[in-house]
Structures are given as structure tokens and as C-alpha cells.
Length: 265
Figure 1 (cartoon, rainbow, N blue to C red):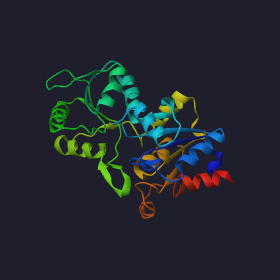
Figure 2 (cartoon, one colour):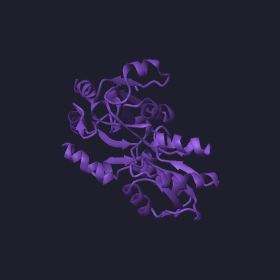
Figure 3 (spheres, rainbow, N blue to C red):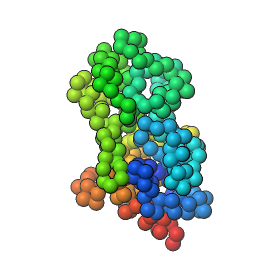
Figure 4 (tube, one colour):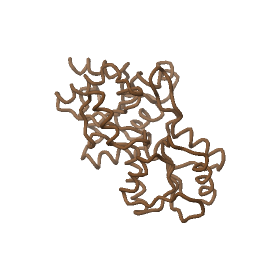
């Protein structure tokens, strides 16, 4: 792909790309509106599995960005698709929020809450309701050899004013230190999430570009899935980080604002 003008569908990361915390990043709304005017598609693709699609739609709408649930694809949804491909109606011990629990239940899975039960998989998400008890039970199951899956590997979730909160990747490291087990990670940078999107929305990889602020998830997704990638410096990654990294994007921009300016020409 020679230019971002060749892109037909932009897969937009949200945290650090469209907004930071509850603050819209300058130029994001204008970029999305221009894409609609040019009959191009934006799919909001997030590794954050702590919220449901309806919550993301509500947040986007509050930020004056028009979106519906079909415009949002989360690592949580991708994980339900993946686990269903392994064992429909599986019994799951889930490290996740109420929103992720509801997503798994609606997908036909049985959630196990206690120790010493029959469990097919431990699934780890971005659990902002995490307790020591949950971690302990998960570790017990993993030491017993139960299958282990994570929604995404992000270490931190970016917030406004340059702050961060620990994300699923940090929880993965805690569990690894105790069990020496690492999960199969479904979300970015695994190409599975892109394959799932192409299947759901009937898209081709040649028409896509992944847009995000993280090298080890967003941009690595482009590398792993064989699609174009666009790094923006509005979130986690700095220009110095990029210069020192061996993970390279197809294109780089300060933010969606500069992408919009180029697409207007």
C-alpha cells in the first residue's frame, strides 16, 4: 500500500488513538466524519475487554462520535469466537468484569466461580474487579493443567494526562511468576482477531489498515496479519520508542488529525 488514501477500512484502536480516558483526542472526530463522507469504513477495534460493546458505543456517543454496536469489535468478542471454535458451551473460570462475564454467558459458556470444579479453560481479561481470591483460584486451576487463554497482552491502559492503569498483561505476568504458565493470547497482536473481523464484516486484508498507538499490539498486529499499519503518537508510543524498536509501521503520524489532513488533499 503506497498511501493511506488506498485504505478502504480503518481499524481504529480506541484508548490512546481516539481518546485518552474520557477526553477525545484532538482531530479524532473530524477524521471519523471525513471517512463517512468518503464512504470509507471505521471499525473501532480495542483490546480492552473490560467493557461491553454497548458501553463503548455509549462512550463514543458521549464524545459526539456516532457509532453503533456493529462498529465495535473487542478482544472479548474475539475470545468468545476462539473458545467456541475449541469447545462450544465450555466451562470457564473467568478473570473479567461483569461486562465480560455477560458476553461469555450470552455466547453459551458456563462460568465457574469456585475452586475444585470441572473447568475447561481459565480465561483472563482486563479485570478491573480483580481480587486476590480470583488470582489464587486461577493459579490453582492452571497448576492442574487447565487450558489458559487471555483476551489481550497490554501491560497498561493509557489515561489522560500521561497516566496509565495496569492492564491484562500485568496480570499475566503475576500469574506467570506463580505458575510458570503463559496463555494463548487472542487479541492484538494475534492475527486471529483480524481473521475474525474479515470473516464477520466480509472484508479483505488488502483493504485494511490497523491504526493505533502501541507497537507491541497495534503495529505488531499489522506485521502478524499481513495488513498495513499506522502508528500514531497520541498514546503510549513516543517517537524515541519507535526509533529504537524493530517493529515498524507502514505509516506514522502524530495523530488522527494529521491523517485527516492528508486524506483531505
